Length: 557
Image (cartoon, rainbow, N blue to C red; front, side):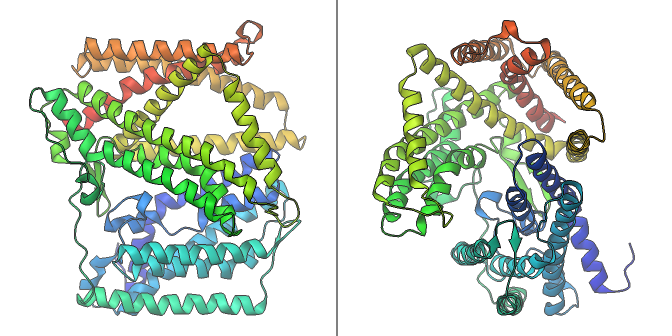
């Protein structure tokens, strides 16, 4: 495309980089907030925070051009460094990128809030949030782009996030209303101007080569830093290829995952202890306690296949793709080693939370929302969870252990499969995700129409029942096809397939046992509900055959 102005060209480049993520964020924010308002009877405050969490973050698709991973905020430094060779002032380069990030994300928030306001009626804040979001985006991009120092990036992110969050929470009123004073708007505008100036100065140093050079990381398949990978030193066994592969998986990603989990487990009692004299830390402690397990599971359970990123390109490393090992056996070892280490990390975190939460009794009165003491509810929740675990029988405990272990393995295999398919079939995956989001929007609109009496209620129920049958049928046929394709292409072996079937059978038995203990009677259910309840038993089999198939697409095609 021919551009007559460098500014227009840079705006076009930013849009081309972020257009897919922009569509995903817009759809995800609207779908999640609409689902919360329609199906869960949530108030407008929940929808507001969903939109803030979706649109208050800088564009990942642009930030990841420097490399790195999402969990560590990507590598710091100006991501559009290829513009350095163009005869364009640094102020223009930085200004276009920062203004595009702030204006586009703020505009998407306004569009989402306006749509929810029109469709559901809650008065979500609109233009009162404009200055806040733009100032926050300027501050975040300043921290991300003005330096190549990782420590400055982490400290700056915390210094930026918590004051803005406290300001927003203090200016929220019930019913939902956000108003900032003229002085506060002026201060946020000043923060934006200062952030722009600091970013221009930092990028100018990077452009001239005066900034400290960013040393490329020579990490293993998990992308963990060298000091963490080399923290555990033990010799590689040479007696068999299997032991050598297990050693490699442990050294490159398994033991670093376990070390991170143990470090978080040791951090939890420290947070509870600090929260006794320092009341503002209690919000962070409770949030950390609630989100530690899912965040660790999703952040440390992914990228088992060692898929890498570089300047917008996703690919498999040559070492991972050319290992002299059968694909099915390689996938099995990778998933089992990561699952074992991740389970150990999650157990350590869970035990630490259970033991450290007793310190909440020393907090005293805690007015979390400024009105009601939240401590009795937290202590009652802790007692309820403890009593429920204490009342389990031996069979129930065994079933829960099997279910938890297989679920973690399925999540690890699913994340690895998604990463591999995104590297091999990026456009097809985008189309599939778009269709899923469109279906979600259609279901939400039908639910809204039925709720307001505009459309028939039976139509929504019929579509949901048809979707359940279609999804169950698709899973069965996909598993059969993948088994056939795996054996035809010599990806699967009899030994691997037998192990996958045995694990799926054990999970199915444990799942039915858990349903029976919970009082769920399949005999009295309709066929649609019975399929919905039993269908999770097919997921381990599906994941076990899809993971080697996806890795084979990268290794041999």
